[in-house]
Structures are given as structure tokens and as C-alpha cells.
Image (cartoon, rainbow, N blue to C red; front, top):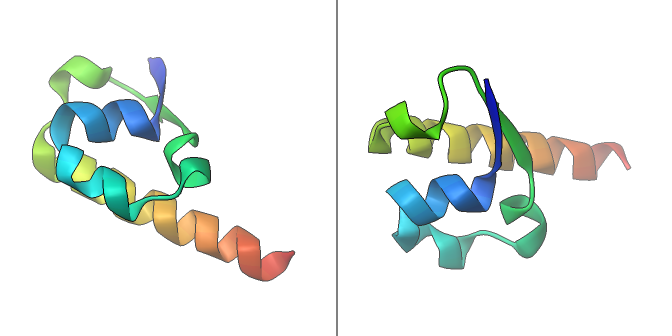
Amino acid sequence: METVTLSQIVEKLAPELSSFLTKRELAINIVLRDGLAVLEPADAMEIVQHSICEHQREAWLQ
């Protein structure tokens, strides 16, 4: 298991997305079962989508 920030995932696999994410979203910690080295671009897109949804849900609850 490896803990990385969303920004690390984006920088490595989908740098074109970085301008669409806030600093707060990029700072989200993500726990990867098999580590960053085995992620594919499609995995990165799924993680980004899920992270944004979770971040928005938290904003609604506040």
C-alpha cells in the first residue's frame, strides 16, 4: 500500500487535468493498494472523478 496525493497521480498520468482541479482537490490523500507504479491512465481518470465527487459531497454537507 502506498499513500500519495492526487497531484502526484495527475502529474504522472494525466497532467492535462491539473488546471481543472483546485489546490484542495490536488492535496487529497489517496491510498493505492498496489502503488503508483502500476496505475494506468484510465485508473487515474477514475480516481480523479471519484475524488472530485467526494470533495463536492463534503462541501454540500458543510
